[in-house]
Image (cartoon, rainbow, N blue to C red; front, top):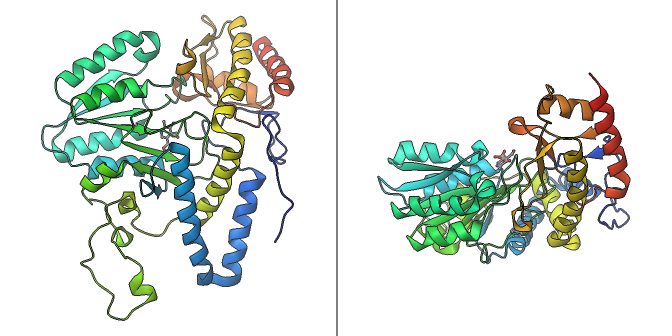
Length: 401
Ligand SMILES: Cc1ncc(COP(=O)(O)O)c(C=O)c1O
């Protein structure tokens, strides 16, 4: 099947012709797939429908390309990116495979999404680790004290800190480099859950001092649920324990299928790169959608997307604050992602879920995690078209009693 070429433009949602919302502001939850991603999936399904197993070779090439493209997005080196179904499994691979010793300390952060907590709690139980905690929101309310607290934990000895690049509810962009410098100074490593950043907030594993990173693909990367990535700095992947290994975790794992006989063996060494974690079959459909989406994001430029969305949020934040909402957006530009989290006006008995439902009834789709009303536009959102209807929806919902 051949399709006409599709060219994306910031603020133009014509690649989302079936989107029902008048304004869709829930990209921090799930992104709707663009026509570009949908066509890639249809193409892949057609290939499997025609050729069955014959289509598999092309999907292997696609995985190679996707790893390289995701790596380029992060400024990672070849072999440092693996495909994983979701953030949680990426975190779990690091939590289970990191060469911890009994009594090692891991730094976690309060207000984090649980995906970046549960695996560290499990690792603590299994390997006898000490968990330390710091309130991530302190990085917004008192950045100096936040770093003093990181210093204090590091002074007690630290093997690993696990933080999100962007807090899922307030949208606070964490000071990754400052955390990494402190953690590395005591011989530790920095793990980052980047699902609320990748695709809309520039991430550079070298400049940001990141040693390992996981991200699902269905939010700002605009792929589908079930396909995401794990970045492992090459020095780190060499030291990982293969606790969650599968048949594809071995070197030369395929040859017995293609070039046998006498190649079926169970003693092949494990891969020493990030591919160690790719233990079995992977979602080909998810891969197709993600590759198409990453190409599209790359053509727009993540820095341009971040600027486009922040201009949108600047205007929206002013309107919300004028109506008594409390913004949790960071004060400085470096603290800002593409999420704006607000609390309902003081004294208003209507909570964030109420506001989210009331706005949805007026065609404005938001989300309301952790008691905050969350606005999360992406590159197709157009301020000039959407701000008037957002204001109308807010005022109309506000007048409802
Ligand atoms: C910070 C953060 N991490 C992880 C997830 C999801 O994890 P997973 O990709 O494993 O479903 C979310 C939201 O769904 C999130 O906001």
